[in-house]
Image (cartoon, rainbow, N blue to C red; front, side):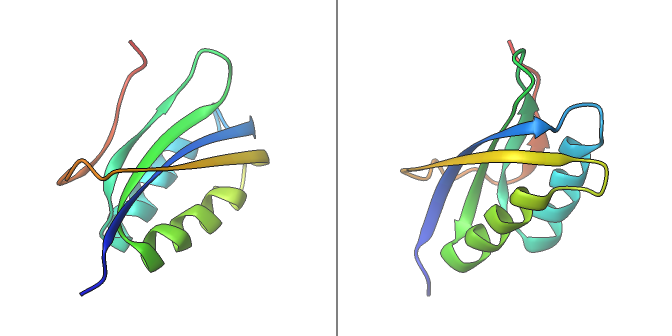
Length: 94
């Protein structure tokens, strides 16, 4: 069985108000990933994906494109220790 990994992403560009979060939820859920996605006050989207490495990497590749209305300029990826999340959700910035 493959090792579970966690990727923490910061996505910049035209990624708010274009359905990016909801497309991320749909895509991550279809792939069987756990984690969350949220808008940041500075216009970026922040996301965390946990799952099998190959699937997480596939999701990261998707984030470089995003949904059709998005224009992704940059994706910063940091790998962290998985927390064992068990679903994928939209979070609000506190």
